[in-house]
Figure (cartoon, rainbow, N blue to C red):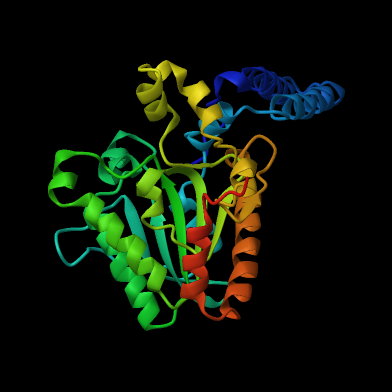
Length: 318
């Protein structure tokens, strides 16, 4: 459920105006007085303030928006965009990992295989979902489903939203690095189209483990990086307080990632971020996914093209 009361520090002026509007609407109903003109004036001011607040966000502010607690998560988009989703569980080796969900679904009548990283909205859900940080069994489950998709000629859609793979002792004992590495190799070999969509955080190998795709999309206020800003700041400045500096240095802005060739498409968000209009954001994603699936299904030699795409990343001419 969307909680419109939460705001980030730079959103406070907007929250104050929205509260004024709510109070005025409530007073109008309770007193039967006509405050139409006053309400219209505040609504106009809210729209003006939105344009000012979100006109030129810094990379760090966009990272904050990518983590907004009201932002739609993978299952929210799956509910709004796809039909006949049937979640499949387990990696057939150890156990089920709730940080990664997946299974067959339909997009505009087209059968696909969904792989998605899922966070929780409260303490109980976050413990269940491991705060969106997959364990090795999550990556092995994802690979099992992708191989199933390859066997039945189903395009794969991967929805990415993780701060990174889980770094705990248990994950290391069960070889999380190996699980991610195998996914990179096997995804490069899949014969079916693969679409990846970064909806929030795209942290390091935790994201890349399900993101070796033919076409990579990212939402305007999402990020995709080798390390989180806090992690980078802790290494370079020995202090996580320098996270904003790290976000700038890492070039986390979605449009910068597009210019660098790391992603292929940036999806505009509603003014203020995806959390302000779940329906509009879902409609945008649905249309873009459908368009790219049609294009990729006509493409030939997908594994070769995919391989060359990733080999070309980081190549610069002086």
